[in-house]
Length: 549
View 1 (cartoon, rainbow, N blue to C red):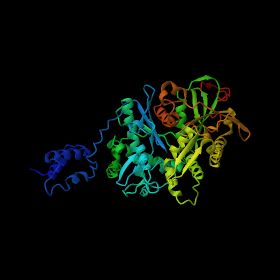
View 2: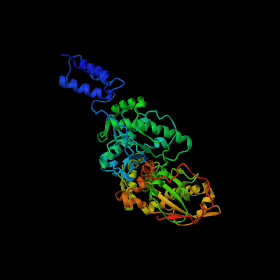
View 3: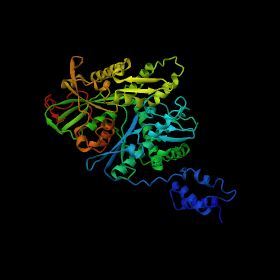
View 4: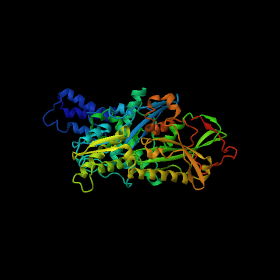
């Protein structure tokens, strides 16, 4: 009888002759050989039989995982948008034929009972054995580790948004990879995008019976300066394409963790096979605050004639983004025009509140600079600070047991009045004034400014107090910022179940809706510098029109 090694080699050659896809070969060949030999091998022939197949350039797939499903061209009406967030990532889809919003329970699809059903923790944890865990599982495992020596990546997006612009190929530090397994920061981004992509596609199938894994999609992006924007966008596109290949290969396997060696084999194949990449990432990706605004203005209907000046403030974990728009009327009907120079950002957001709360809790516990266990206490607090913050803002108080057996507590009203929070409010209001001062003064003739708050930090006082219905003086002009209801009217009629989650989902909702072509009056490429632009004086009368919001 032929040996197992010879059978594997024969099937390999047969597959090449019949043009069988290489990634199907390893599984088919080994299954057949094992069925013949019952999982054993001839002496001297077993060693290397499996490796002969698996080590070839085209067959990096481990036989423990199913082959990726075939990718068929997509002809349906759905557009998908992925919001890669600093703390939490989200996704949303839109049926452009039916003009129907399609919420995606990506947390539920990923099997994360501790997270919001519509979001995933932007976290990765690599254990000492080289197994990679994602999302809420990563957060849970990190909570049981020694925070001074082993932590999870908890803000993967920061790899693109913070720090020097490098090629990202340097190995990650031992703090995040204590087992010393090979992985660099760019690969970390690709792995997380694979998890996010697969979770979104699984949710699309479970929630809306759409089984295609090639649904057209776009990503929203942060507000960057031009140099970082080009660098980060290129990396995001590369990592998204590799992430799609990994999502197909390891679909549904994330909850139990995946060996880094298996992931890196597939990373190598995906990065080398650029001609086979099938992900559809659309050009002209919306900046996050513009996407957040787009989610507010769908189905906007003018009821009275009056012009409006509008601003969206999208407060996330890492940044707070600003963008301003004017509602105008011309021969083509109503349009929403971005105002030149108004799209900007500040690195004061949810993470800033986290840091202020950490300092406050340390002060309350008398853990000063010279404390013997200050490092351990800080590492422990940093791991759970987002949960501590949520409890504080939900309940009005929080008590925490520290690693040095001491307790620390905070009262919300006292924390809000601490110097650090005062500093954040001042920084936010200064930026708000800078945005208004940075646009042409002609826009301020509209007098009133509607302010929309979105993002996970939309309810923070340092954000909401920006729209206090009190006049703000900008040079010789004055404008009155007026806060607008938190959720748009269309959401209450069509997606009542996600109203509570809307602030966090606004960016991906707007990206999906705009990508499906359902906001034609939002001229994202038609920003204007001055009030009036190329419109006639009659069309720009101040007694224009207002909608029913």
